[in-house]
Length: 349
Image 1 (tube, one colour):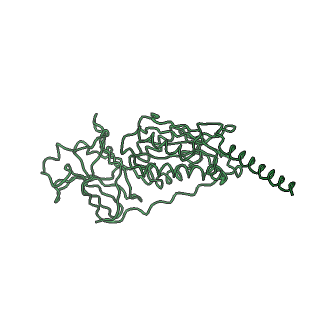
Image 2 (cartoon, helix red, strand yellow; image 1 turned 180 degrees about the horizontal axis):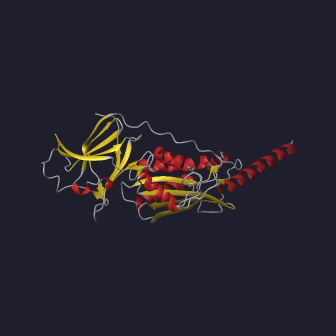
Image 3 (cartoon, one colour; image 1 turned 90 degrees about the horizontal axis):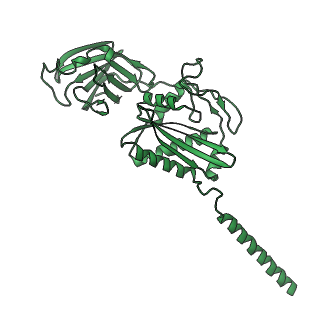
């Protein structure tokens, strides 16, 4: 009887010791005290971007290099969500960036050089671009986020984090998915603008993913699009005066842009010559298709006329299968150009 009791006591002690050992192992600090979760690293990077960039800056999340397409998509989606919800920066719509990716043939998990990210940012009308990477060296997992000013190529943020190997990381990497390398430029012309090509191995082995041909948007409907308030351009980073867009008409094979000199209401005849007549040259106009930013157009015709809004200046472009444009007027002489960053044609009047 005593023997049974001793056996039970011994078993209880053994269980208690094992439990204590397990607790000690669970509470043992990480070998790397600097490790943070992936989501924490993303939030920290977003905070730095918001602190270093002016409020209202348009930011394009270009790519995040990793062994897994799923991993890269997750990081970019999380970063986009944090920035959008905080509301300080304007994040370029991922759908617009996806069209660029399809046209140029690169994947979010592939390598993109700083110079190419900068060029893609300009095509998207972004003032800053974000790239990043996930790397593993021995037992160390590392995430890096970089923010580059599009106009100057200045790096304003480079946030580095050691990442903890938790269940989220394991699950994302377990998805695998080989990443297609980047081949930026004309198909068959080789790598350009410093972007690397080839394939990148994923957890499922080495393979190449073909990129489907981009689908073009439906384009604008025939009709008149009146803007109220009238569209106002930017000039050297400041709101520009002297030229506004009052209406855009779409008819047949043409898109016609109607400009005025005033932000509201009609103005007197005769003010025309002292206003925007210096830009009355077709070469000074560039209409860029934001749904396909590699394509831009000059007017096919221009004229001045008078209607209910006063003297109106118009430029006519061939109809483009898009509903989003960027229009640049100038430069003329030493003056900086007028830039209408984004013109969106929704439903006609």
